[in-house]
Image 1: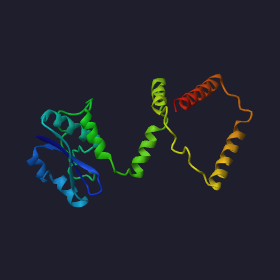
Image 2: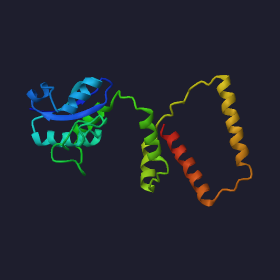
Image 3: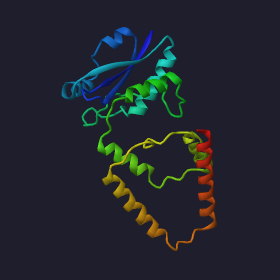
Length: 200
């Protein structure tokens, strides 16, 4: 049996991905940088994959090293990364198997994102243009979903605040001329809403 495991700091940040048999997993000794990080930030090991196919374990290991960014070439930097190889057969263009995807999902669960991570994701998403096919798929995925605020009772203070927003939006729209494309999109959105209501 072969195992793929994650070595994490005490606050759940992955700094090393490993693959091996049961004996290798039990042995916590790795390289000197792994030791330094463990002593400074704590050490927790979590097995996330068991398989009888060593090639599968290699591929999963390589995928996770790329995913968590634990590859490094420096012994002395401050980066929380202690893998000095890319693992397995490399991971460029690798199509993850279902259990590898599950392993990555389980590893992410319960991990709070730092403000820095949130800011990076926000910047990456800004100005992103979706294709028409992507937009259609997103629309279909959300069709039939019940809004999280449906049936929610607003306080009088919240109602007044919302009313003020709608009045302001109405003022901005006075005298505004919409293009044919804009009217077409509004009509399509209205039709989709009606279809959702009928489906419910």
